Amino acid sequence: MSELAPEFPSPVYAETVLAVNFKDAQQLFLDHLLEIHYAHTLMLARQEIMPLTVAGACLQALDQLDREKIRTAGYDGTTEDLFFFVERELERTCGAENAGWMHTARSRNDIDIALYRLRLRADILIAIEWLNAARRSVVNLAREHMLTLMPAYTHTQPAQPITFGHYLAGLAEIMERDAERLQAAFRTVNRCPLGACAIATTGFPIDREYTAKLLCFEGLQLNSYGAIAATDYLTETAGAMATAMINLGRVAQDFLLWCTAEFGYLRLSDAWVQISSIMPQKRNPVPFEHVRALASKSLGQVTGILLGLHNTPWGDTNDAEDDLQPTMAGLMRDGVRALRIFGAVLPDIQVNVERMRERAHADFLTVTELADTLVRRERMSFREAHRFVSAVVKELQGDSGHAAIAETLIRMLGERARNTCREDLLRALDPAEFVASRDIPGGPSAKALEPALRNLDEGLRATEAWLKDARAGLNRMPGLIREARKELVV
Image (cartoon, rainbow, N blue to C red):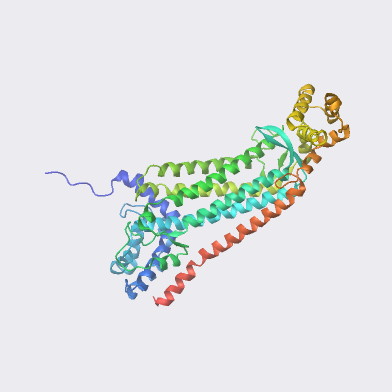
């Protein structure tokens, strides 16, 4: 006679899976689970699938749940997960004969996907809020430094003069695109899967649109198979955050370098500087290290999301659910932390304008304009002009003054210098003149930068308006639930 099989759950399974997932769900998804319970119960009553008296008892039981007690309850193995734990609490309050009606025409499958989306859409709005705050800091600093000369760098080497404002405006444009990517991800996430049930819908005459309306979704994730199987709402959001974090981390790396004594471009106020425990002279610009580290951590979790979903079956699997969702919450949380630090530290940055200007005058950074001047005044091809200027740089070797550069070029030109004088070349070598002459759209001159900053301001206002509307849409949920209860008199 064989021994009876042990009862579910196995102690190891309970400890390594169920208890961990239960705790995660308590912290991340409890409120969203109860929102779904309210909306689904009201829909069942409205469709006359659930008796009004039963619906009233269930709604009152939901009202009476002690959320904090549920949120802090330990996992004891008597229920499989938070859903069944809450169901048991409802049965204790309104009786199993009433609470059991609530699970008509639904499954844990569509419930889970719905509450994941409810959580994620809120997290996306938080990310956009702090991204916008960082964008505002960047634009404000750019406007303050429209005329602050500095070198632009290519291949980590000084290349040509620009302004710090021009550098920052480029960053602000990228951040605007980051916001657009997150807005697009929000629209993908904000679709309601409820009514898909396990994966093939239900034979009950439910009203999916009504449930979606109560939960403030923009519409349905229509196909029931896709509603349960699709994970693009996760990967699209993760991809948008990954792009934003890569962008942020690259700039944090620049700013860390510019805070070094060797560069000396930037200095943080005492509020942001950590000292050494042993070296009294140290002023460590650690906020940018934390921005870089948190952005990298968020990006690492993005990789976890993509790898966790790669090559999984096209259907309902646990790969996209309990074990993965905390990673999604973590990458959103850490990304927001990075954005908050970056946006808050920028207004306290002290910019060494003189040091930047000094470096813009060094390293032959303006000699491209010498070649351009020869093209304009001597009507030679740019390639020929480039050869003359290159020969000057090679002969002088090292950092020479503008006068030496101009005189050497005139000597090399000889009879070719028919229309070019020393003053023309000295003007071309002036970094301020170099920048001012580049006034086409996208250029570093103040003439080009001012309208660019106005456009960035308009973009910020557009995102802020979108965010306000999106938040207002989601905040309608409690009122919609109340109105639905009044209409049904339950």
